[in-house]
Image 1 (cartoon, each protein chain N blue to C red):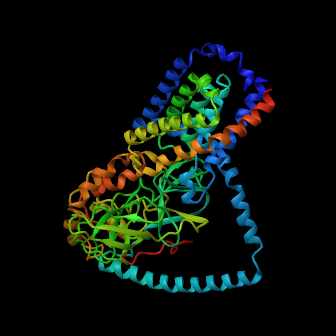
Image 2 (image 1 turned 30 degrees about the vertical axis):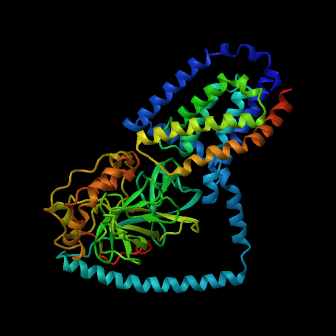
Length: 393
Length: 158
């Protein structure tokens, strides 16, 4: 430090002008960058490259925990492995039984809807991804996973584990992607109460283990233990996947809104792996169903392909809802639509007003569409909430 | 000397970045000081011409890539406090560590205020009061951090 004693006398005449000048320069540069990134989305490419460059560092940082896990796994005893094997066998048998039933139900549902064939599955394909880095504070809850654009991952893709919804991707690099969790305070997911069909929005609460449902009126029909599933509004998450279970309902006589907490079903802290899911492009949960697309669903097999990787359309505001006209023939869980819409109405605009600024991240999308209470769930999977594992090749 | 001190600087930045993105349990994560910001402050105060405002800007850009909602957010905040530190480096350098920690506290507050405002403008508001906690822990941990960095740099630079 003392070595700089001579220079300290004239610190303002360093290379590149005075500190004030250089600060102004860099500040301007930052502001321009922020503007381009936020308003114009010009910097997607730059971010993509930077994310690629950052990935090795993140891998390196995570290597000690990863090495520990690997060591623990490889030192597992034979007995433990046998026990686990037995348990998995049992679980698989159960799942097979259930999926048999599921197929029958699906066919029945298709017949009830007057379609010739059973409805195609909602999800096209799955991809397991390993969690590389995990950031879980009450301010910021993100995962870094080891799949990126080269695997076809796109921005705003749903991420699940075997128990429920985890979140969605926010930034995608070539070999890695950042996932925002549903419990992040910036995230909101449109949900439906399984028991009553009431729709609302679940936002991340200020801690890592719960969701808040801040937009339910005090007289809403909800109680502890209710299952929340995705409502399919908003277009990011398809309809019917389990999200959370209500743990706490607090009604205060002077408050117009009920205070509801729910615990997410997914266990991010114990998971080593998550599932990325591609949903059918022609199976939009969004309301705009035309007669054509219903026909296509009936035929059952248009373009069984993962969605292309367009980051941009997701960020754009959702298309204006085509009024209540076209929807699946009266279907989608008869308990749902007519009852729920009026009840959700007072909540929706407020939700949109609050969460809309969640802007550039795709989390802005769900509230955006949720603000249009006119829409009804698109012709959707059977209400039996298909488990993500089924249908996996 | 110049090359060597630049190497030290890059190494310290890398270590600080590692500490910043290291996964921690939730309760500890809130308390985690902004190591990279502390490191940049140290270099700005003690070697204003080696690092300078450019260091602040690029370190901020790194933070943006790792955890910023918008590119340029941390870069702006860090440029600002680097500028203050470089301007006042003589005054700060001559003070004992405790008083330096006070300055660091104020600088971290500036930093967080800028982040807070940009978060609000860009639509990612995180209003939990916990976000201010790291300014306190950062100031508290400043004396040891500065001592470690000074030990490293002093040995090589002298």
